Image (cartoon, rainbow, N blue to C red; front, side, top):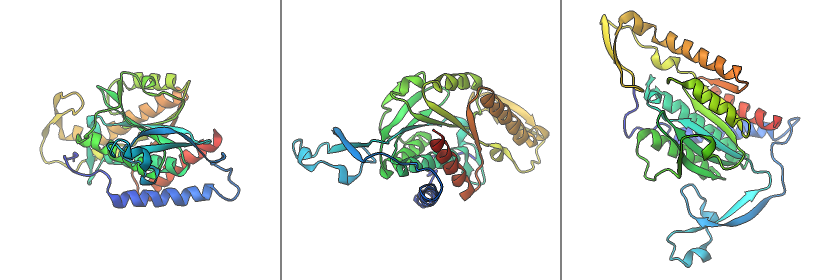
Length: 302
């Protein structure tokens, strides 16, 4: 199975389900014996800017907007004293289009982006999105606050995968460090099904010296658990490199195990570098709870 153009990765119903899980789990951390995950004295006005997708209507400065005939609308920008910045780095490489049973790897990454972004909105954190593949790294969404902005991050990731983005990237750089203007929490989400992943991990380790980096490794074995094939030989194409190869029926049956072995090596390499890693499976509500618990626990430790 591969992702087809025009197919939504995450539906609005799923977004609402994600939000319910986030709110329920976060309320548990906001009460009882848990340390508070929010502090500060409120919000501070930091200036005016043009309206962007994801901004709330209540933040529009109508008097200022009239000065330019409402084109564009002008937004009053606020920051909370305790506000942190989360920049989600999400993989949009071609391997993420693979999947099984109607669930692509990109869908799992999109759900991860949505869960982390909505959790950030609950914490009243700024959240932004950087997307990458084997050829480019770019800021898709600048960090902002709010639920609508969190949903905008999810939509921007989906548009990046489906190739239907209507706006160019804010910035493109050949390094992740060049895209991060201030100290941030950086969840790095990928299947790591590409060559040269150790170079990427070394870059993340250098990035970790200034930022709070952790890796979300999407367990992709499920995407290669194929039904039994009757053909003795199958012509295959590597979606990342375009290389063609003939595989036997037995080789095809071993694909899932080979992917698992590859990702085991990736996980070991991440831990060897002293970076935290969350190996994530796609298994319904537990998936979102695992993410939210991991994020909340890390915030309280920090």
